[in-house]
Length: 396
Image (cartoon, rainbow, N blue to C red; front, side, top):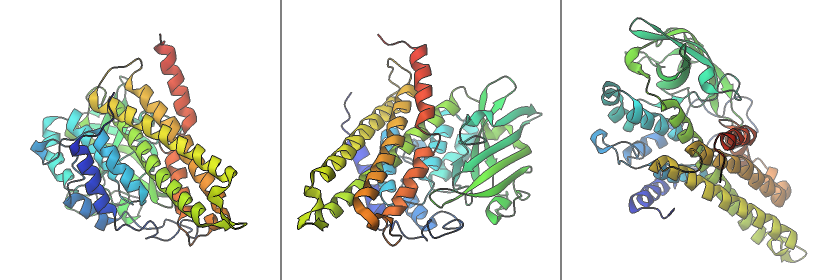
């Protein structure tokens, strides 16, 4: 394996750094001081800048106005977004759009891809299941009915649903197959549905869809999506084999990139602080106990990085291995979930009381790290999945 990035991938990362350079991680109220969500929706101004620099269409082919790049390029951009706690559905939108391009019918691709690559409509993904711990595809049932599908079930913690236009919902059919339904959260005439209006009803959009507000650990406004005999046209359902599994692996790998970006910024903040903070006439960075803890967290980050690029490379290249790509994704998620938690905990410890000061930005990174750690399931679930894969594919 050669993890050297291509010129195109590096250019995407450079463009992302330019877009995110002016983003302030504390641009919204602190989640520690807010009883509800820190904001109504995501950062629309930043979203428009991402669209204007073609960072929303990275994975799209040239025929849809995209750059034709891969999962590695997306992860490089996501890594930069996490360093500034960018409040945009970049992960969900990009992965959903890439899945539609890869597995969707030609009519769906032609109707959606180019427009979504420009940021309109906005896509999100319901990937947490009913509770956040069970498989997302089992939380919703899908049955054929005439020229469409009828969906029933609940998906919790749908990110950025307040402001999104379409939510990609995995569902299980009577034949025990997974499909992806693109559920409209906006009316055909442009009227916002109850999901955005907060009315708890999607009467203006897809009938039978309602959204109840949830507040994430990071303070963002998530939603519980309820589907009560919600009807979706056949043309808006992706039925290709493997579509949900590929989307889930890409989502998980992208989440690992977010964890890496948060961890890198937090360790940088900690190093800067420890180099300036003095005790007994010396910077605390010169104390052995401090240096050892910081070194351990650096090792965590390097392991997070290596496993992330391994997983992204497997998805991008389609290369075979001793285990399916899901094994590499599981390893990356285990390191990301546990690693980012250790990094922010050590940072809080080495900052002392200053780290808990709500006027200092570190506590925001801690909240985001906890949200990322548990997103799509914690490390324990992926350890179990990895064990199952090892049992099914003995090594050696």
